[in-house]
Image (cartoon, rainbow, N blue to C red; front, top):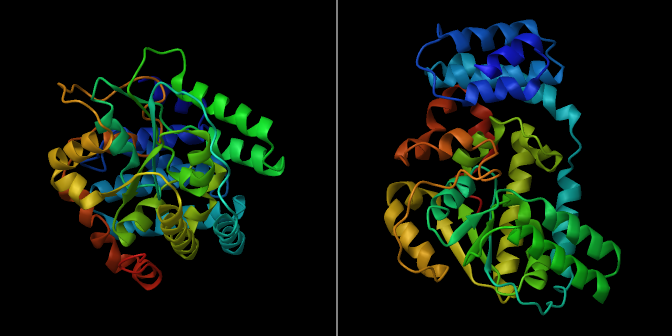
Amino acid sequence: MHLRRALAMQPQFASGWLRLAAAHRFQQLDEADARLIERAAHASDPSSEAGIAARFAWAKVLADVGAFDQAVPQLRAANAAMRPRVEWSARGFDAFVQRQIAQPAPPPQAQRLGFAPVLIVGLPRTGTTLTASLLARHPEVRNRGELNWLAQLALHVETGGRQVAQMRESATLYAAQLRRDDAPARVIVDKNPLNFRHLGMAAALLPGLRVIHCQRGARATALSIYRQMFAHEDNGYAYDFADIAAFARGEARLMRHWRATLPVPFYALDYTRLVSDTDAVLAELHAFLDLPEAAVGAASTAPGSIRTASVWQARQKVHRDALDAWKPWAPYLPELLDTIPESWA
């Protein structure tokens, strides 16, 4: 396996440990990959990027085999080591949410897209990857994965004073990044969950925008976030339950604002329904997106379609196990129940 060889030659390849752990569900601790990850978790500098990644990976292996009592110390250590490496402030995020709510939405830009733009948003680990993957089975849908353009364009436009030329340029650029050099499609999806921060700008840049808002149980979501070592600095809240809770409260508040103020159709996607009644939810999504009935195939495997921490889960059969996945952790992770409510509402 190329990944094992790469790790043998370069054990500081941090993301390699995460990929090795995410490649499949472990059944026993004496599997070769499990032993390899365990050695890395115990041998690496615990404050190094590779050492942190190896501990996240080892916690995942231990959880796979049901050893939650052993997984929790690894997970706590990994998160405690990761938190000082990122810059995230609950106060700063709250101020950002306040600004977004206080300012009027930018003026809409007139352009013909030739497709229906769709943003799948919400907290990470709420089913955004799975939803995009299921939608991409329809021949009229293109899944662009998690694009980072919207946040960059919003910053560009806002710091420039929302000048007409900047708005027009940004609208053209975002549409081009969605369209790419590809065959025409009825629907094109950007599944970056953190786009919820800039839906006012998205509505201005993308005529005909539709938004799918993914939601999942608060504790299941919080634990799933806490178990990840994210690649992007925007997820700096992920390494402390109090920060996760603050981020989630801000997301809920901002989404209520967007739904009340934007002239954009929203579909509220409940993760429980998605995994328990997938066909019905998918039919509702097709209707929401005005997609014609069509034979659907395997989810798109185009480059960029699945590159996130959800890669393993999105490629499995949809099942109900994920709904209560947090419960076996609760006896060993009391801070989950102490900090995270049953619902963000």
